[in-house]
Image 1 (cartoon, helix red, strand yellow):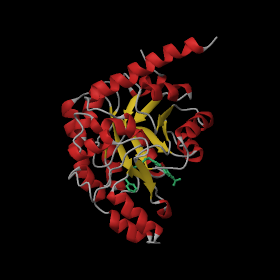
Image 2 (cartoon, helix red, strand yellow; image 1 turned 135 degrees about the vertical axis):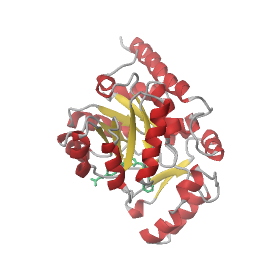
Image 3 (cartoon, helix red, strand yellow; image 1 turned 180 degrees about the horizontal axis):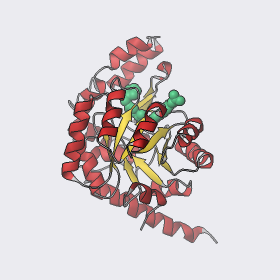
Image 4 (cartoon, helix red, strand yellow; image 1 turned 30 degrees about the vertical axis):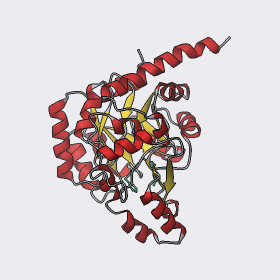
Length: 314
Ligand code: TUI
């Protein structure tokens, strides 16, 4: 059985977080992952507080297991959704795309375990000092908003810098990736891309088909000129975005071009005008499965690799 101290800290059975994917990670997917023994996560993304409260209630109607809410710190509603997290005494809050320090005291006082996503050692140290229960160290292989460092480089440096558990994210889609993360001394993994094709994931069918047909070089990062690079599947949208960026479009012009693109991908399946955020491991995702099958395959696969790996040591 694969179990790390982080499982006891968070009250979960298996050290697998489901990524808080904007417009995608709703109560349906999160409840299924939590029910399977992992940590399901609802993405608050750019939604308002009432949407989040509704999703939390829906999830609680489906499972009594621990779950998380992802607060995207660049959201215009970040203050309000942060308050909902405290009011609802959500078991775990995961933050992304910024520094969560201004919310941490209120969350911790409400009994919420705080697990910030970090892309650097500096932010990991800062949030550890502020009382984080763990950190997610997210490499640039991930889909969505990304930092510079790879998972292989980032995770061990964060592990060495803080004395709280580290969860590895970015580039992990099967048991081999989970085992590798544990070898880097992470205590768990966060997986997004593979859960895109889960049966309980309510994303558009076109999104699932694009992920399944993707190969190793099917994603690209755009938006470096804005300071907020984003990885997505290469589509007409990313080509056009990159063309505008290369032609010197301002961050405001690029933001306007991108407005609504995540919703168009996730909800409408608009292959022409949508932004299909996705990690570099899309080429490893080849079939639809239930969330429980995905969680079990990640954990069972890791157990297999870890037990076989020792045979190579003489
Ligand atoms: O947040 C994510 N992934 C996301 S958020 C998102 S919604 C969005 N859409 C378009 C543009 C921007 C956002 C889609 N995917 N992952 C967690 C993550 N956080 N990755 C990198 C970071 C990060 C980067 C810099 C966290 C902190 C940071 O610096 C903080 C500081 O100010 O020191």
